[in-house]
Structure formats: C-alpha cells, structure tokens
Amino acid sequence: MSTPPKTVTIAMPIYNELFGALPEDQRTREVREALDTVYQFELKMLLLYALHPDCVEPLIALNPWRRAGAQWIAEFHVSDLSRKATADMNWHGQNTSRWCYAGAIVVEAGRVSTHH
Image (cartoon, rainbow, N blue to C red; front, side):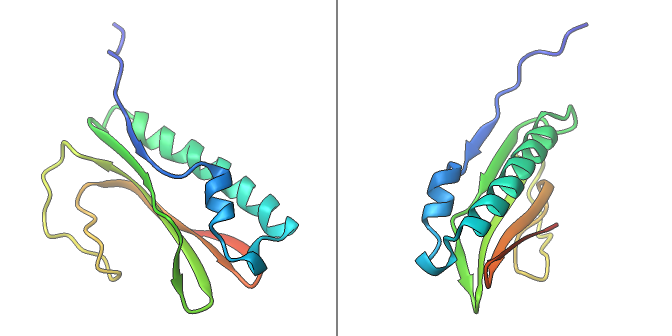
C-alpha cells in the first residue's frame, strides 16, 4: 500500500540569503563553508522529520538571524500543525507543543555551531 503525497509548508531563507544577512565581519570564507555544511545538514534533517509518517501536517521554519550579544542565531523547527497547541513552553519562551524537531544555527566570533 502506497502512502499518499504529503504537503510540506516551508518558510525559510535560501542559503545565500541567510549568509548574506550576516554582518560583514562574520561573512568570511570559513563561516561561508561551515554555514553551508550545517545548512545542508539541517535542511536534510528538517525534511526527514517533516516527511516522517507521524508528522501529519508539517511546517518547516528557519527564522532569520537574531542577535543575542555576540551571537547571531537562526532558529529552526519542524512543527506538526495537526497537533493540538498547548501551553508547553521551553526556557526560551517558545511554544514547543507542536514541535517534531528543533534547534538553532549560531555564528559567533567566526565560528558556526548547531544546537538542538
């Protein structure tokens, strides 16, 4: 028995937009290469979770950079919009009740990292 096609809603910048939105001092060759690697990895993970059968109505989101001190943070998540939204919050004040997968890409002092 085949699975019917699934519609996935995606709200995220393409790689060049994400890199280009960093401040000039962070747009080095090293950051470009590292960011490309983590962007590609996270894109694959976002799709993997969105296409999982348990995620009925997937929304993939990668937010634009926000600054937190010396860090530039781009948060991402896969949410299942078919799940009932509840008041489940994390310590960042984010409602996590519909999340299937989430994390952030962080650029700080010329280094790129991911956090889940």
